[in-house]
Length: 111
Image (cartoon, rainbow, N blue to C red; front, top):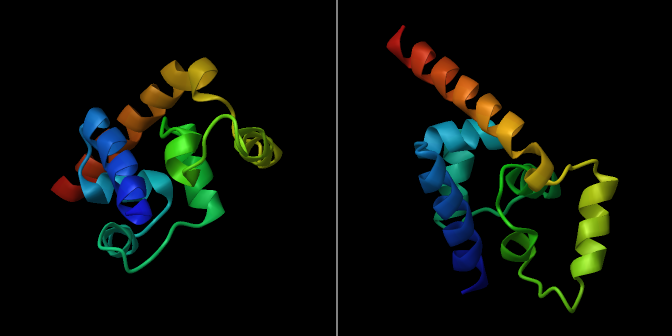
């Protein structure tokens, strides 16, 4: 069940951005087949990919399945150590980057 909650969290954010699985995989730094394997439960996510997902708005609690009162501070320090900035202060810039990447991906697909 824990894995399904990770999948649901990432898929919810992907859906909110209106991205295909391939586009979302590209943004997270994964190949589409790796992301598909993750969705099907055959592969996990590296800390680097989890940090990238956090950067694009997937809550740390959903990624790491922790509660704010137990281990939350440790995870937030871990994310800070990896130089991941809070989405709250970066949302506008991140959204613009996502939109630019979507345009680039779609333009590549039309070639």
